[in-house]
Structures are given as C-alpha cells and as structure tokens.
Image (cartoon, rainbow, N blue to C red; front, side, top):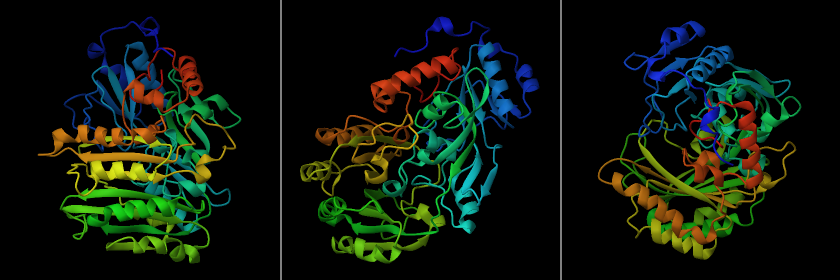
Length: 465
C-alpha cells in the first residue's frame, strides 16, 4: 500500500512559527520547547537523534487528544516517548508525547489482571503482581515499557510456554489520529484491538492497557556462561538439545563479547563467552534433569541456573539497563541446521574477529506457533528462531558494527524465514517494516490507518502506511 497522499495532510502555518501558548492552554501537562530544561528525552539508544518542535508531558488521554488536534491543525506529526526504548529519529515537524505521568498500575488478584498506564515499566508490574503469585509476561528486559513491547507482539523468556505477550491483552485505551479516545477489546472496536497487537504505532497512541496475569510464582531458569573457546561445542550441542524440547522449556543462546565494566562479572569481561539461557515452567523438579546435558558442553565460567522467583526473570537475559549508543541487526530463521551453525561460527565465533557485543539466537515454536484465540496483526508465528545482533557504538569499533551485523545476517540468509519481528529493530525503513507483516496484514493495517489517522498525524516512526 502507498503512503498517505500529501493532499490529505493539513495545510497550515509553518510548525516552527506555531503558537506554543495555544498548545500550553490546551493541555494539563507541561509543554517544553528547545532550550527548556524539561525538553531533552533520554532514549535507550543514545545514538538516535530526537529534536522535536515540542515535548509534552501528558497528564491523561485528553492531553494526548489535544496534542493530536494541535498537530493536525499545524501540519505536524505526533510521536510517543515512554521509557526511551524503541525510539526513532524525529525532527522539528513533530511533537513528542511523553507518557511518564501515566503511571497507574493496579493489580486485581481476583480476575488475575493488571491495569497499566502507558508510562509504566514491566518491572513495576512484576513487583506489584509478585505477592499474589501472578506473572506479567514481559520480554527479556523488564526495564522496558509495557505498552511498547505489547504493540510489537512481545517475545519473552517464556515464549514457548505462554506464547506472545500481546495474546494476553484484555483491552486498550487508545487515542487515534483523529483525536478520538477509544476503548479496544475483542468485542469493542475489534479492528483496533487486532491492529494494536503487532502494529506498533500505526493506529494510535495507547494510554492504558489491561493485561492477563498467569499464575506463575516461580520458574527454574537462568543462564550458563561458557568459555568462548568452547563456542562450537556449545552452539552445536545447544542446537541438538533444543530440537526436542517440550513447550514447558524456552531457551536462547548468545555469543557475548562484554567489555570490562562494573556491571559485568569479571570472569566474563574482556573475552568471548557463550550464554545459554533457559526457563522451565511447571514441575520445577524436572528442571535439573532437563538442562543436565547443557552443563557437559564445555567449561562453565558461571552457573546461574536454579529455582528463582518470577520477579527475578530479568536475570535470565541480564540485558543492560543503562542507555548506550547501539547498532542492531537481525532477522527470523526458518531453521538452524548444522551448516547454519558453521556459518555463524565463521562470522561470529572465536576466530572471526567480530566486533559485535551480542549475537543471539532465540528458539521459537511451542505456544507461539499456536493459532491464537483472538487474531492479531502479529505475523510469522511459524518462524523457528530469531537472530539478533547488537554492537555498542564506541571507538575504535563503531564504524565496523553496521557492516558486521549485516555480514552476520547475510551469512544466515540461506536459512532465513523471510519475515521480521517489529520489536527486534527500531527503524523507519519501510522495507524492513513491511517484512514484519504478510501482504494481507500490511494492507489491513494501512487501510485502518487511513480510517483512524486520515490526516497522517501519526505518520512518524515505526508505522505501516
């Protein structure tokens, strides 16, 4: 589908000369212009430049609607900033809505649900649900925002057991590109409910979500860290072990080149290591037997696997929490064969000289591949693995990282699925975004965008048009 024609966009004054006092009068939250102390927004990837016309710390959904109305009248677009993850570049034709003040987090242990504002991070919900033995289904990093993960689907540490995180959404409160505040459930505005789960920012700015909380108090999980000299044995052994896993087990593997930093365990710093992550749900007594074969694959530098409270699920991937400049790359794989392992070792193994900080494979399948009870815009449930690379943009390797990421993806191209997942790249590249969806899904998302955002106010960032 083509982008929204320019003729449908509002014809108005230059946004740079728009009257900010009118915007200030229209909202309860604070409005910040360039040079104001509250203007800068910290993005997790600090290499992403954001220089909007204004930043608004919205107080509620009505504020979001007012910002959208102002932007529409002045020919501007509106982007959203929650926790700073998933940020894309914006310039002075855009107003950024910051949702930090939308911080409600209410657990209902009777219905096993949480009502969560758009500014809330997963760890906040996890901590609130833990006393009730309930499990908010976060991604690998609980420090990211709830809403951003859900709009991209959500592939978490328990993905093979519980499926996609967005499959556990009950409802959204969303402000569309027309400024309308709508509820979306499987029965109320079902087309919006379909598109908001997987469609990223295409159809509106979400202000609140209600999610289901499965009763999971503990898991058997963590990570085994092996010496990088054993990378081949560990990679091939993990691949063989993972092929016959029951859906009660989720797992991933990462080749790590971690710098010497205070948060990095000394035995892992400044060297190549291999992390094998596991999470077992159900009868935890079987956990040690299930992962016993892994412990024999090589020299274990750090064994951090055992029974853990669900509240500590972030320790499985141990993703960084501090903002940093990063270059990311990746794709989906339909299979990971022995030949694929050979290629991955060639471009990212001990002898490769790769500058990449993380090269990760996540096993999919299990519950993710099931047909969901309520359809969504999330596609490619049939993929077998995700491949994801991250490089930290610091001298002297900064100029090498983009090419190294692409080299890694290209080496695995013979086993590629052909699709992508929205949450595994923060990009405005239209070709990449389209690969996140099949043709029918992309066409429906584009048609819904024309209906709910006819003036293109939300046509910024990672959207389908």
